[in-house]
Length: 95
Image 1 (tube, rainbow, N blue to C red):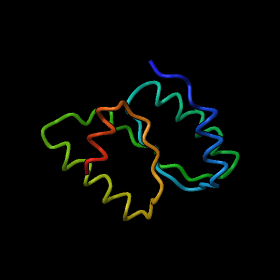
Image 2 (image 1 turned 45 degrees about the vertical axis):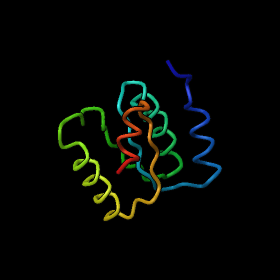
Image 3 (image 1 turned 90 degrees about the vertical axis):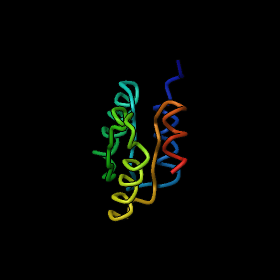
C-alpha cells in the first residue's frame, strides 16, 4: 500500500515545466493517477504518452522494454515517469 501521490506528482511536473513526457504505469492505482495527470494535461496543454506496462511479464520482457524505450527515443520523449511497483521499476531501469 502506497500513499496517494497525485498532488505531489502534479506539483513536480508543473515546477519543472514538463510539457511533454511519457507516463508508464502498471496498476489501477497508476491508472487513477494517470487520469489526474490527463485532466491537468488538458487544461495546461501537456503532451502525455501513457503506456500500461502491467501486462509485460513474459520471457521476452527485457526485449519488450528495450523496444519500448527505442520507440520513445524515436518520438523524442526525454522525460519518463515510472508509476510502477518496485520489481517492475527494477526490470525497466535495468534496461
